[in-house]
Length: 434
Image 1 (cartoon, rainbow, N blue to C red):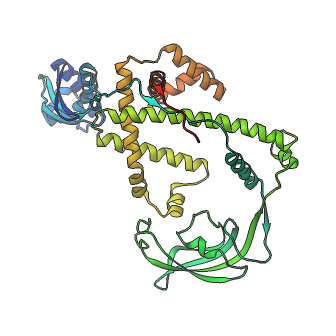
Image 2: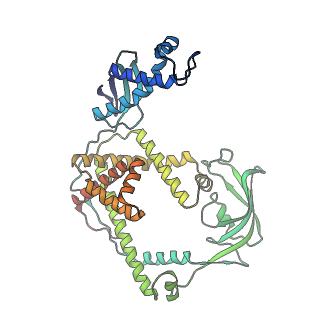
Image 3: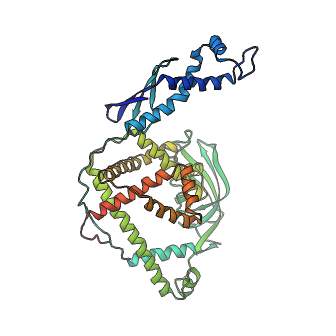
C-alpha cells in the first residue's frame, strides 16, 4: 500500500492512498462470499452459486461497494499510521479508481489535531494561597452540619419564611387557560431552593397556612417549552403546611452526635485540621490552574470546532451522570432550571474550548520535553485502582483495555506528569492572603 499526506489549509489535509491489485482481489473474494450467501439464483442454493455465473448475471461491479466496505477502513487506518497524522474527525472519502485487476485509489480529506506553537512555559510565576482556616470558614462548616442535622418542625401558625419546607397545591394559567404540566397537589417545595420559575418561591414567603394566592410570574425567554417562552402566567396556589428547621445547639452533645469526639472543642480542632487539608488541596489545584492558564495564553493554537463540540458532548454526558448519582434525570433538570439542551450546550461552550486548548498545549509541552509514562508508573496507578475497587491489577487492566480506556488513562497520567513538571520549573510569587 502507498500513502501520502498533503496539508491543504489550517488543520485539514488530504491522504492519497493506493491499495495493490492483489489486495483488491482479496476484498472482492470476501465481498463475493458475503453477497452470494444471500443471492437468489434459480438452480443454485444460497452460497453455492459459482463466481463466474454470479458475475455473468450481476456483473463484477455489484461486488465493488461491499469490497470497498471491507478494504477502505483497514487501508485508511494503515495510511494514518504510516503518515503519522492524528485525525480528530471522520474523513471524507473520494474513490478515484475501483476495478477488478486494478489498484484501488482513493483520497481521504481529514481534519487533524492542530499544531501548537508554544510560548514560555518554564520559570512561570505562580502564587500560592494559604491553607489557614478562618473563623468564618469554621463557622460556615459548623452551620452546614447544623442544617444537615436539623429537625423539621411543623409550624401551626405564622407565615412562611425563606428556607421553610412547604406543602402546596398549584395550577398555572396563561391567558386564563390552564397549561399542561402546570398543576401539582400536595407538592413539597423548599423556599429559596430556586427549583421553580424565578419569582414563584419569593411570593409564597409571607403566606399563612390555608391561604390562597394568585402568583404572577413570567416564563424565561429560554424556557424549554416553546408554548410558554416569555409568557406571563398566573399560578393559583394554596398553602397547606409549613415545616421549619430547628437547628441543634452547638455544644458537646452535638459533637457526640456528629463525630467520635466527646467535646465540641475536640471536634472543632479535628474539623479545622480537615479544612486545612481541604484548603491545601484547593491551593494545589489553584497553582495548577494558574500555570496551565498562563502557558495556554502564551501559546498559539487554532482550536478546531469539531474538538470543542466533542468536548461539549463529553461534558454533557458527565453532567448527566452526576445528576443520575443524585437521583435526577436531564428532563427533571430542564424542568427545574427552565433550560433545554441547546441552552446548556451554549453555556458549556466556553469551558469546553478552554479545556481543549489547555489539553493541546499540555500535549505539546509533553512532546517537547519527552514526558512519558513508564510501565512502572502505569502499574502503580493500576495498583491504586485495584485497592480501591478490591480487584486484582490484571482484572483492572483487562477491564480498562476492553473498554478502550487504558490509553485514555495513560494520556491523563502524562498530563498530570506534565503539570508536575511545569510546577517544578515555576517560580514562587508572594503568598496570597485569604
